[in-house]
Length: 529
Image (cartoon, rainbow, N blue to C red; front, side, top):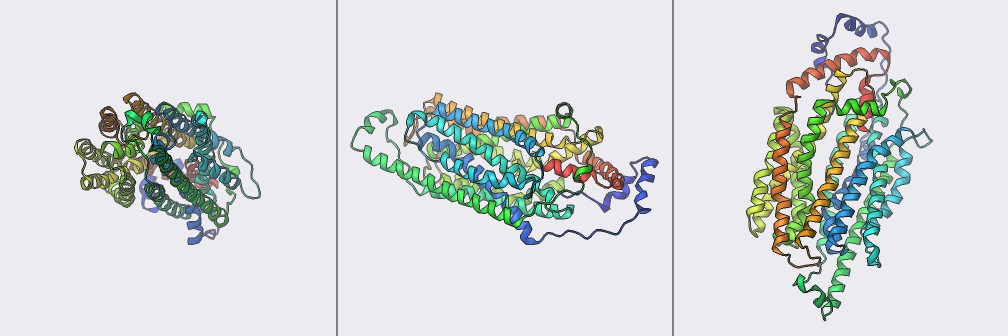
């Protein structure tokens, strides 16, 4: 978000000692001709924004559909599926800081420093993504097949998304232009989540997924005359998943080409003048000992885990507990559309009433709808109403953490003014913990279904499985949300504290601007990484 400028410079000056105030007046004596602003065209901004779609489209498709695909289409046993989902997400979490480290060590080339990562990772990522949705002919090695290509894809998409995120700093030297480009990007990324849900859900939903009327007699039925029809129907569903993967892979390639041709990476003019960054492990110790960060991470870890449990198990819940086998993709689309349209509402709400109030209101509003989901019987209209209402809470759950992390970083800078280069640690370890929690949630939930007696390809499931799904989608998320909100009570940065920090930092940045390169630019680059 754009930092406040003129309206707060006067009040911020009152926070500084006279020596700093005198220093801040020096630029008036060496006033230079104002630089011509480097304007980005609307076309440039749109090309940059399109680059954010591949990560969201593929992530949404995998998040909602990979579990049910492994269990009911690839016919992977639940225990192996839990290993694939947990290890894949955990590996994804590990690669974020690792890829960020290697990118920071990259040298400048003719194409730039970041663009080569985007260009060369794209074709490999597309192939790996397509192979995730391919069912190999060797059933004994299926679990290893999916584990390898899932981890490979997560690595390659990280090699695309991390440099793409950092590219914000290198498309213009004007902060206002960067902010404008970021607004375009966030709009396209939100639309990307809807697009991923719509493409995957609607294509897969057109195929009639095969099922066995009596899962307990699956061996007997597979040997009967229905076997040919069952195999044919299963192959049709597998082909539908491949078609959806092909469409999404094509979107990935088109977006990467548009980004590469429409955006020119520029060398940061102040790149060689940045302060020497703090050593990694020393910075990590400082960050992890910063109270507001630890409390924010702990609180949002539980609330994020709650929504990830709902995301990962929603398709199975709709199919078997509610009995809406042919409607779950439309329910997912209703949730994502609702979340998309209510993001501006939450952006207005947090600026009007404060971020802590927005957290309590937005995330707690999911609880009554989760309770209703656990209590209702098969009623499609009520389920759609609940899905649309739940999308409002989903928007708040995924918007608010990213709007509050910069406040924690500002607070850290005031307490440790000489600790440069710690911003990537704040962001990368938040992503690390979130993705690791996602892997734990998917692994434990799939393993729980195995213990409950989940039957692959069953038209119905035992009552224990239905109860387990109800626990995973309703009761457990409610408990995690309550625990997260209780931890959030300990978070110390309220609106008054945030305004004080902002004024003090703005005054320090005004003073530091006389040295040639502002700390604001350095903070922005590191924060994006």
